[in-house]
Amino acid sequence: MKSNVDTNRILAWRKLYISDRNFLLIVSAVVGIISGLAAVTLKAAVHTIHDRFTSDAYDENYIQLIYPLVGLLLTIFLAKILYRDKLGHGITDILYSISKKSSFIAQSKMYSRMITSAITVGFGGSAGLESPIVLTGSAIGSNVGRYLNLNYKLRTLLIGCGTAGVISAIFNAPIAGLIFALEVILVDVTVANLVPLLISSVAATLVSILLLGDDLLFSFKLVDSFSASDTPWYILLGIICGFTAVYYSVMLKWIEHQLSRVHNSYYRALIGGVVLTLLIFICPPVYGEGYSMIIALLNGNEHELLVRSELFEQFDIGWLFLIYTIIVILVKAIASAITIGSGGSGGTFAPSMFLGGLTGFAVARLINLTGIGQISEINFILVGMCGVMCGVQYAPLTAIFLIAEITGGYILFVPLMIVSAIAFTTVYYFNPHSIYIRELVEMGEYLDKHDHDRKVLTNLKINRLIEKDFKTIHQDAMLKDLVQLISVSRRNIFPVVDDEEKLVGIVLLDDVREIMFDEKKQQSIKISKIMETPPALVEFGENMESVMRKFETTQAWNLPVLKDEKYIGFVSKSRIFNLYRQQLIEQQNYV
Image (tube, rainbow, N blue to C red; front, top):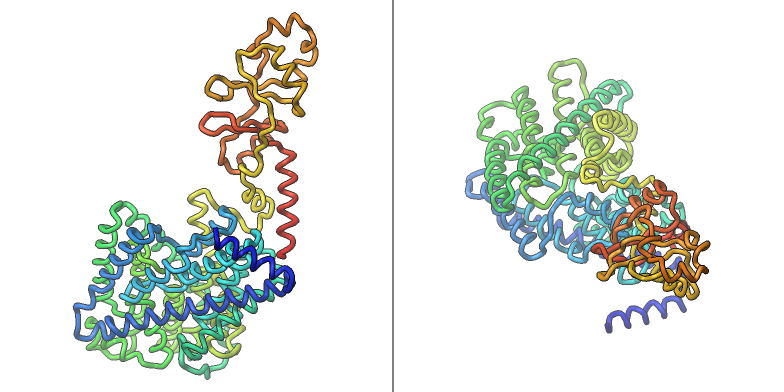
């Protein structure tokens, strides 16, 4: 109670001294700073676990191969016992909260996914940190908005600020963070409202740079420029990246489905952990996020990767390394799907970049080895990362600007655009929805963020629409009793109930107008004889799309609402339209 009083005092003071617009800018900066700290904390935690427990995991200390299994079991324990949280695709949770929960995200998600993902990935789980940290940033934005009593539109904007902040901090890429929030999370953001997103992105990036330095992922300089003569090869790369993304998505869905048949979460983690350990033994580069292999390839340290695999350490670099790379691509998709499907806390962002980098390298190496061309393998690694990430995330602009920013320039902008466009087109041919939206579609909970009418309608709640000033009458009452009610009622509908307050029918004023003043009939006609069945019934908590379909089907203007079969009131079409109009006005103005 005291915290509510303090909040109200703060908000009252703010209204006096700070304009709404300036207040929003300040809040967006705060969300950015907190999101940046969250991203830095997660990254530092994973590196600490790697350095303390799992460094040099593939050279001599084979006991460390069981760490991914330990990480999965610990993750399940924390999620099930401490947080009682069902782990899934973090971005799916965000989209569901925006479309179905009025942009409210549980407070526990501000920290729970940070802890579980740090354990999963830190102990070698083959997944990424980006999706969990995006959910963390979104939860920070949502709960800051909740604390400040902001409306739905502002809460949604702050969710976008949190999302932009964590992506910016993870990659030191503020433009990519901003675009990711716009492309994946938000819609209908005006130019003026880009400013809070920009501020949040910049604030988070500065926090990351101050605490971790400039190079979070890749420490190299791009030296190979783009040659227009390589365009046909980039077109080929775009197609192959598209099919790689499709392969990964199919593996993810299929393996998650197979593992979901194991209902005991600990058994599921045990099975997945054992298989994951075997895959890591065969292909050590699939351990963890996988960025180390990308960095090794970019720096030309291929031999380091080969000698770490006992299957290939006796061979020279060449065709066999190309074959090995293809095997790693195939295995990485499976390992990532097992990590996520068996209960690990992680996302698909890093695996998609890993798969893309190796796909680009494999294509370039094949072209160079066959002698049909001489192309930059470094460029193809980077552009391939963009292609597969675009195909998995369905976020082409994010992929383009992310690679451009982390390479420190825009030399590859043209091939990035070519490959992302072709990869996205290839993937879209097989499925128009990303893996996040596909999950909502299969649950029947998908709400297209571009469908404004449905979005506004979905956010309307029955409990805000129920009207309770209708006079009820018992089914055994006489017409004279109804006449008395009519004299004191402002309504022309009278719900008829039984002894248990259950609705048995309704009486319309128009139906009794001709007989209501007949004293003889007043004494002789029971209400049960003149009542009629309502055209439709609305259940308490029913979604508004279903309610509106009932109005359209029955052409009624008022429908009774029941809770546990008992009458509690009416919902009217006119009230829905009025509240709908208010929601539209609110959503046109962020402040």
